[in-house]
Length: 267
Image (cartoon, rainbow, N blue to C red):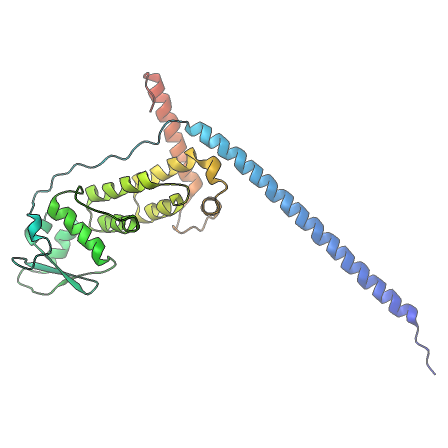
């Protein structure tokens, strides 16, 4: 009869339990060091945000200014989307929009190119992609009324209208949209506005957002969207380096304040 030695099993179980305990200790130490390192990084980020905000100064962010540009051609608003006497039709989201070449041909290089691709004798509609019908209607209303004063732009339309103005190369309308974005910027939407501006290549609005970041960084440093923008090198906008942009904007701001102070005035 074979007698089983329980001492061998006991030793195996002892060393197994000991290995698990050591692994648990190692995990606890690694987790503690990681959390400590993260807390240190957060403290450093908060201290740097205070420095950036103080360097930017208490003075207002430089305002964006409307572009005053007279249109070479104008038509009575009565002709807006009026089929009678129209000589060009746009197809937007499957719906026709009636317009007039005499107005659009000189409105922008983009419209000129679109109209040049379709002779006046051609009755084919010019299809407009990637622009919603209400947004295209606002663009045309801007052209027929000769300015943005009559536009009633909803909050959820402003970003799309900015994109459309950029696409159709309507600089004055684009600037008007930028100003609306700048006036409505807050800690909740600033990252979205900045990403959209960077994507479109709208440098003035991007710079305004960077000024907003610097001026309000002590609050924004706790904002998850802003932290992701700040630390994620592979952001929504390819090639985007937010820290370099902030550094450039801060340097410009400090130089502007210095020059203004030397002349006896402050920005």
